[in-house]
Length: 345
Image (cartoon, rainbow, N blue to C red; front, side, top):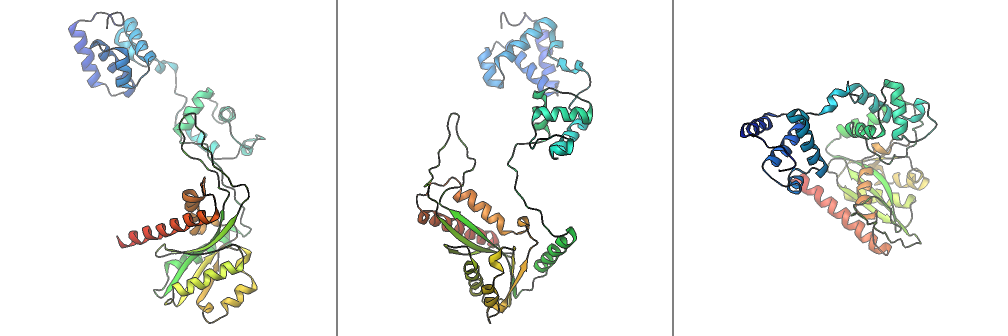
């Protein structure tokens, strides 16, 4: 284009096109593409749209070409010396980010880019700019997420591992005439759980909350073989809710010799009412297997409840608990249908 590029001979244009086709560096190739488009008299706005680059980039490429020729297209940062974000630096950053700040002597609870920079200076001797730290964090796949609150298991590591191995062996060697299920309860609140959602620029979605909360409770069990969910509902979360589920399991698995129930140590699972129920003729078909305390990640049904909250209760717009429970039941039924189709496929 006149005024942006100098007048070029035909042989110069052909040489530039050949260098474009032979170029293997993506960024350098983009500069060559800008140059070739300018040579072909395409306007700057058209080049911006076609190559998805900024107008300033187009003008900068043209300026460097006018001053230095093709040598001006090469990334001059290669003259800056040794690359700072090398494998050693990124590996150290990965280790630091996955650790606690107190492990490195900081009296804070969350990392900032500035503190990460200072910590990496201590660990590697390399100092970078805060914007470069943002690049480094993207390179290691780091993200800002919400930590998961946990409670430490009071058992020894050996005792915990032994119990988990026993439960795994039970499931792996389950006889054909026996069934194993993972059991747990979940709270359904009319006041919706607030969680992230997609929004367009300038928008903040609103979730109407009824104010006065109303609760319902589910007790459920997931079959370890079929992944089918069996559940009961009640207005209270007590031993009766758990016993209702146990009797539903007895009816649902009427042909099973033994029904193994894998569950946590919640108090409603170990009351005198439960003991009396298990002592009956039908109750003797049920065997309870308690997980180590505070180990929800080892209870497979927890994943079902997380999916339920994500799909139904989070940011819901239901005005009544009746409406909300209708949506909950629909989602649970649809989940079981999908599970059945997966098994049939």
